[in-house]
Image 1 (cartoon, one colour):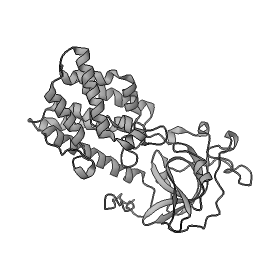
Image 2: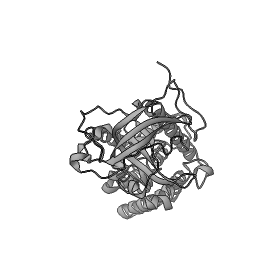
Image 3: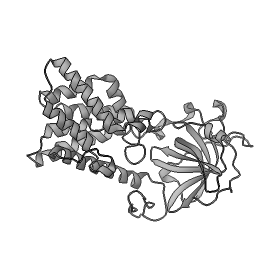
Image 4: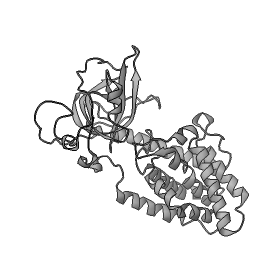
Length: 359
């Protein structure tokens, strides 16, 4: 538990009108005093280790939690395009929790504080702001042009699959305009890597680039099978995750998970190929693709129902883990809240901190 609980003289949160909810000017709900000049907001990665905060963030993953004494506090992830930082409002109430939702833009007043090597914001006031007053470019990792370019590269890489069952399956997926629209919009995670709109598309295109370069080094690997497996391995995340409310799990995502959902979608598309072509989809190819989906996490402890047992499944797992780890650490190095020295905060999940360099 962070220090400082109970020290806040918190102004309570609320839902201001559009006139009183401008992104960088004016008082937070109910504060006395006149309007102040607009101040350029600092990215999360630019926040100092100790300093005041008064600006807009994207709110995600809010929780109203009790401390060891049974008093409630509000914890929320506050994000922009550079990363996220945890905010805590002590002595909170259900009214504070209900004043905004995940995916809302909120104006936060408070102060940054180091606790256990991590930077956090102790919130004194938080209020929802009108999204029309926010420059969304400060919160989007990928712009529309980036998504369009990635989708074009995805199509070009998949077009290298020669005619046959695999190419027919790719065409079946690509013809589902609703699925592909969701695919382009979906995150690939909620926090650790590619946790932003378009993150799944970026992750998959990076994997296809890796497959295109690495598979020729191993002649025994079926390059086309691996390419298609990389394309569909996380397709269940289009159902498991949503990005409208700040990259979070759907109910079915929590209850079923993207691996099982991915197999269901794959089976549906294989059936679609058979109905469209009037011939049976090769059962061995279907089994190998399903195996790649269910084994891509690599280990039982990481949620894989099966361990990788084909060359393509082994290589998919390794490349998937490579991209996820590099993307996650890159996010830490480039997007972590700024601390003194050349190191990131200690990362409990990874069991280490990372050197950012000095100067």
